[in-house]
Every structure is written in structure tokens, then in C-alpha cells.
Image: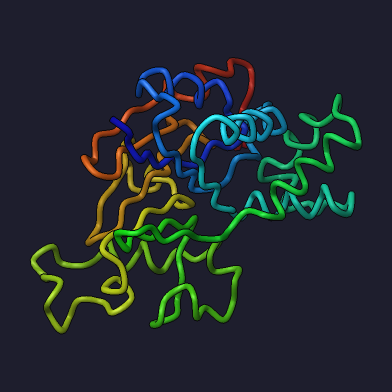
Length: 243
């Protein structure tokens, strides 16, 4: 039986991705929805992109674009980098491309350029890296950068009183637009939580793989999840984004 699995922020941690897929028993029958940030942090960003591109040839995949992917895309396109990106994992990403050819970089650039910022399935579930601010949904968002940077949607969801029901006038209109919302971007480690978090109808799958956390995969129907080992254990001698 096929499942639909949401995958949190990888940040160049290809070993974690392979490990958590093995633990989750991922097969070619499963539908995979990646929530963005494939790069920046650990030493295998270019290799991670190659790996997920290969996955898309053998099973259904949706690749959402994250803010770190935007940075990487801009660098691959222009060759120019900025100090903010380099500090936040871009330096490791640049190094991961040392042995790549111009043709290989062009293929990866096209892959990043064609990624959607969000996806809405046939059950009205939204998958987006960060969030949106428009009361009419991401389709009406004025600033597309919010798709990969906004944290207000998540902050609103986790600060809501759990007793506020969906039919209440107090329930946020943004959240009523979708049956469920799946995001990454804001590590649950910020809240001293090492597993996926749930607020209102929003699920946060970013469990801090960029830092000292683990990579998480969730079955979006059952909410069962699987995790890799902590990334520093998989990449001894590296710091990831723990600078």
C-alpha cells in the first residue's frame, strides 16, 4: 500500500536521508513530499540534490523550494555569493560542488529553478517550506519570499489555545483555508523539542537536522514518523550550521 510521506529539512545530510528512509521502509510505491532546504550545513549538498533527483525518476516526488535552496540557486546561476549565505551553511555547499562539472551544475540549477514554492493536494492539504501571510492563501501572496521565510504562520499556530475549535470566530482565517498544513523551516529545537510538532492544523517536520537534531519523515495520514540519528553523529568532525 502506498503512503504519502513528508520529509523535513535535509541541509546536505545525505547520510541521514538514506538512514531515515531505510528506517521508514520507503519503497517506490510511496509518494514523497520534500519540504525544502536540501542544501547548506553538512558536506553533501550537491550529492543530496543528485540523490533526490534520482528518486524522482523511480517514484512520485514533490520538491518544495526552501530559503537555502533559493540562495544555492542564485549562486549556481551567477557564481556570486554573499557572506550571510556562506555563514549559514553556504560555505559547505560550495565545497560540495568542487568535483562537479559545468554541465552537472546546470542540471542542478534547472532542478532548483523549477521547484514549486508550495503544493496543495486533492484533500486540500498545503505543503510549504515556511508559510504565507495572505488571508486568501498562498495563491494571493504578494511577496513570494514569504513562502520560504515566513514564521508568523507557525508562531500563530503554536500559540493558539488548544481549546479553540475550527468553527470558532477566534480560529485564524489563514488556518481555515486548508485541512492541514505541513511545513519545515523553523527547527523544533528552538522549542527544546526533538520530534515533529503540532499546533492547530499545522505540522512542523523540521527537527533540526541542520544543527544537532535529526532528520524526520512523517506519514501525513497516520502521523507516524521516523527519525535518523543526530546529524553530528553521522558527520563526525563536521559542525553543520553549529558555528
